Image (tube, rainbow, N blue to C red; front, top):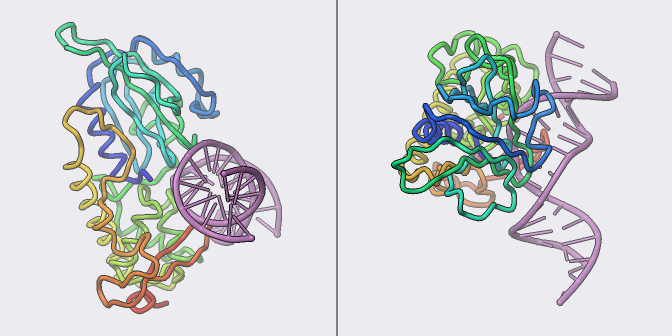
Length: 280
DNA sequence: CACAGCTCCTGAATGC
DNA sequence: TGCATTCAGGAGCTGT
């Protein structure tokens, strides 16, 4: 599922492909692809020039030569793909953007938003400051130059809830989803059910370091597996399965100590951890 | 206000 | 074989 590194990979792909181009047409093929909080129909972007592609956590947006931005969230299965206008529509194609093309380009292509599970969405949102209004409640992610590490650590320590819940809370720190939460906790040797308020600043700091390194590595791997011809602007994890130490490895030996990785369920999610390395 | 839990969705995997 | 159930989870919403 797309978390920060995957969304950043998508952002880079979009940046390479559509910066400076003009959106000629918008075709909405599924009503759920438009977020109900959208200020209006996606048609708003018709005729707009794409000036920048922004991201905070898992939220993406297209900055345009007009006051509102087009915001996107990939949800569980959302993808942006650049395809030839001739290629058949995907089964889960939700929105099609016709883009102005260079007369010299060999193939005419279009941008498609595809989403099997329809947890992803697009929206028109006010944009005047740093991030669109729809994204304004989302905390800065750990790669944001203005990320306030000391303050975030202090905030974690006020939370009377399990550390994993806190790590997934996009209002505390954005970008981390279930996979990188499990991987970060494994690296930092923290039990997912440890109370956030019971952890030392040093421990939470090491968790943030773990999250940074896990996601940086995923970004590098996702970036390298990324096709130079942008046909691969997908939301799929670029993180190879071999790189995962805990997530999805129930019953397999912990790469650090050999004990079997356990899986528990809470907060409507699976949590994978090593019962030996990660103690409450 | 803080926090827990429910809900949306589809397709793959599993159970009987 | 076929039908029913379970599982996957981001984030907003509701309830306590």
